[in-house]
Image (cartoon, rainbow, N blue to C red; front, side, top):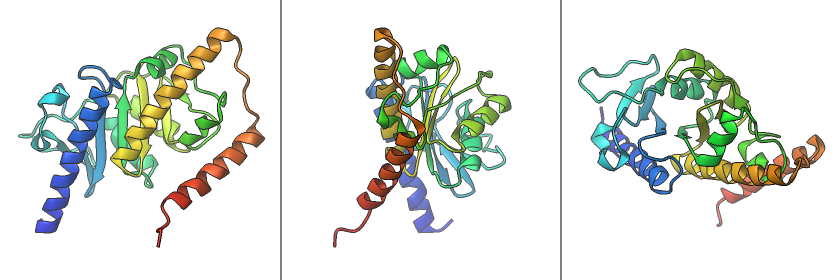
Length: 224
């Protein structure tokens, strides 16, 4: 491996640790719950299994190949590595994933409720809703298939009786989206306490999605 590639991997490992710590310290995913990964080489770098985020170092981040292989003398990867790989296979245009057991998103997931277009900001996940994929045991290929289906046309989804997932171009973007999903989940639950939610029509959401796309493109244009 070249010096530049080693430096790139080291930097990404640090970013994975920093993202996991930010997720945990913000309360987005309590205790040891949740996991974080990003693409690297022909696979991904992912948080290890069973370790508290305050205890992990960049060296603890595990490289998992596209075939699910990892070095046997390394830390064990998160038990959820299956759905991380499945998400990257389903979305070659995304490079990072944050999985959290955030309070309100998880509550909706346990009720098997998607987040509909009760608020225009639902479009931040790339569509007219944030779907809830069916339940399957954690760490199984079956759950990975459900997640891949849920993320084919969305950047976020809920997992029944489990939690939420957000993907992005970068780790920072994935973490920001996971936080936004949690805010939307809290707002949706509060709305339901007042009565039925008034859902925006598909036509309006298409307009909003288009505006979000142009807004994002404008945000990354050079300023000079």
